[in-house]
Length: 619
Image (cartoon, rainbow, N blue to C red):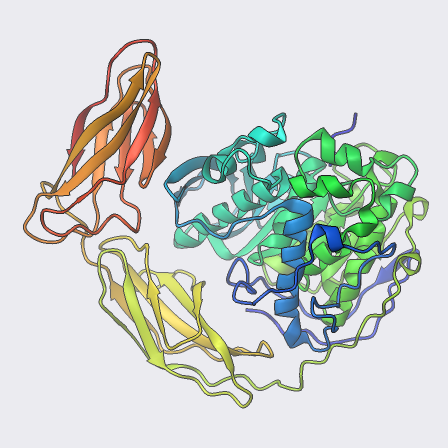
């Protein structure tokens, strides 16, 4: 068995025909950098999603420009919310839900590694990734490598990008039944979640990016991230790039069935891994996909629309035509169909599909890809060079898009609006606490109407990269989750419905208040239940023993030898040997004088006995 497999630049439209044969150069747009947020369309109202029972059979690829209300996209300004519709369809019928950023994400970035700690709705999980830096002083863009299989890390580093080695199996484990999924994602969202491993792995990539954004940019830059992986990890890289718009460059390698290969095309491709196998081999795809393995023509979405979710950002697909199981012909159809959206958005230079290679070994490092890989990384992650994408399809696995579509690619205008809003003015901060601040500004003006504001933040009084931390439809914004006694700088920019963005506002600088000092709180554990090999402490009561309000607390205690923390809730947890540290999360850190929180708890496994933790301290 073969292993299954930000500043947006306004693109210039150009006419180009994507032929299904040979090498087709794609001319036009300059690089479109990644978005400043994970999901630009999060504020779009998506309605009219079909139910499974009402889905018609559509033998050809669904029209990627058709909106849920039955009208077609006619201007680039409409694409943001139409992408949100495609995302909703892909989640419901193919991958399962990829949740938005959890309520608590913390971690560290060093020159050798990244730690990620997540808390949400009383549940928590942690995982880590390695960092391998290229030569130079940095900070560096990063390519997150899923699984460490098949990626040309030497070329990535030679192009000036760091390699972040991420083990997806720590976030979504293979070899588990769908009713009892395991890993960090499922620790937070439940083992019976209908979300498949690919979306769970993509969620892990997004949390790594969250931590890079919070780190201040001294090691890795927050606005230039790529993702890659081969085989099953190529599937994961493809989904990660589709679902997080902060990813500037997506580079799946040999992703096969369940990856880029068009679902409708796979049944007719000789030797390709069947959809039933891709669904049954591992819980990669969402549980709901099981209803479509025998009739993918009922799916209201296909992989060409997942490619469209990546547009207009960089996409470089590396495929293998020599192994039938990898479904390269079906993948070429998915790529060609998705490339039509790139074309409509004026970004056809930003997509490459390359299967015309000599080496047939699975996940091999191929000489044909080395130069375009380096050029693509330099273009999208380092903003140098002008590499032009191409369709290099192997003659032996060449799909014909004309056989699989009955729709035409529209000429999407920019809605006629090329004038950006005026810059916001009078940006000021008020009500700054140890962990948050409130921003306000004077409204921008626009000739056709404002769509909202982007809030940018940078660490320190100088230096550091401004990255987008939120959006607002009004002239105010509350930023939370800040570090006590730390300086931040803020800017705001406006955007209109056509996607034009204003110059940034003036800069507002704040320094958060100091956190709590020693002797201000007490921690008292209550053993809720225990058995010979474990116990639950609930609540761990934290009480403010001072005469004034505290805005944060840290509890430390020691586990007996052999005891292992297996779960926690309503606190951010780190461990060092047998020492456990629990810090408040956003909703339980502020305590008035004499007030307590009883929301915190944890569970521990132990060798047979009755020993319990000791040495509780609270500051």
